[in-house]
Length: 254
Length: 254
Image 1 (cartoon, rainbow over the protein chains, first blue to last red):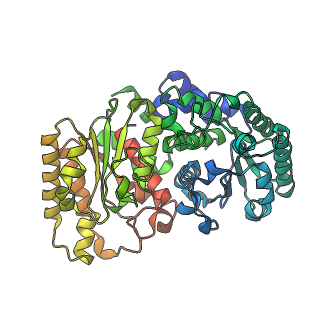
Image 2: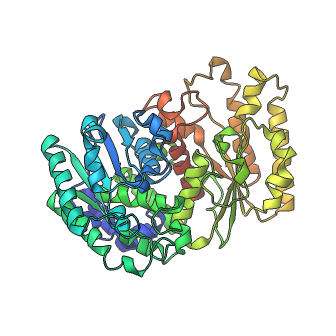
Image 3: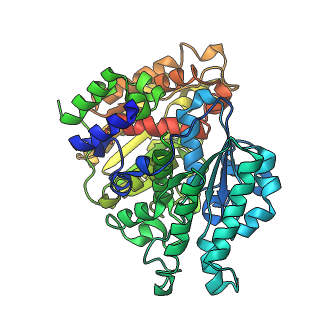
């Protein structure tokens, strides 16, 4: 076990960790480092691409999408917080970070724009958060895809990516709901759980780092109500976006 | 010495802290906790007010200035990052955070709007970052104030605040430059240093927590060039804003 992990474990045991790590993250991800692949390696000049739907997009300025590390390009959600923290803390790495999330996207829509919005950027690190629309739009958007569609499309996307970019480091983020949110009802469960589980299964299959966002938000709801974290249950508030940033950084070991 | 401080000290000695604290902050603030007053106490429902000039303002939406904890109200700089992190990590505290920085402000302009933009909000915690314009505008804006003006105006502002709100917890942020920035030249030094020192002296006088931003940015420049942290030398980039957030949180002990 590398030194740092040992250290984190020992901190957790002493009970003084609350001041260093947010409690919610600690409670939500006690074993996350064991669940996933090894820590992310950031070489000098590493290109990091954040991909997904509206949660990743979060109002980014499409006109500036090629402007690396740009505030407006990064949007206003977890992508901004995660990228900004990486740039601040790993300032000697000359990181090149892009956000290419697009609101409303399902997996097949990532596939349609993958050449331009992933392969062309030749990312060293690719983080994907996708799935909530693959379920949601079957209820409200007239979308005919099933859980099998999600799994098959996602597996093909990851497989194509790995074969074109064999050294890519993958981070698969768990699609999640913030329970009790206005856009949700009981018909989401347990149907939506299958999408979460599929993302985790694919993470294992592709040796990706997995970010367990669902348990993070489940823990968060013990501290404050759903409106605090994201009123509609899908799109996080600024507090929710920071939780995601903290979870992402912990999951990848940075 | 409280337990946590002892712990932080021991972490610093073991050399494993890099993974937990950003190196830059660690290097810039080795003794900050000894320099300042005790940790900030956040009672339930605490009102936190961030005050200052354009660095604090950072494009906040003035139309929403009464909308507590709002993304647009908080702007796009260190205020947003600091507030978002506080809301995420102290979610059980029902914090009420406002940004009332205004671009171009000098101390006397804070005084002019202090009733509305501070006293009326009855903050439990007041963080102020002011000073760069008090110097800068003597060079480019026809402002006749001197270092004595800055000190006297700032002391009066703090004194008035303390007498109306005796239990207020003060955080005084060091005005800073990011050396080599486009808006700076050699004539800034050592003249501007006096403003930094005055802020620190006032922090001691009023038993405020002091946030040593200058040493943070001096350390940061060892890792990446000035354009990375804030091209004009005054207004931080997103990476610079996160450094400020991390320094602020470390200084106040949260």
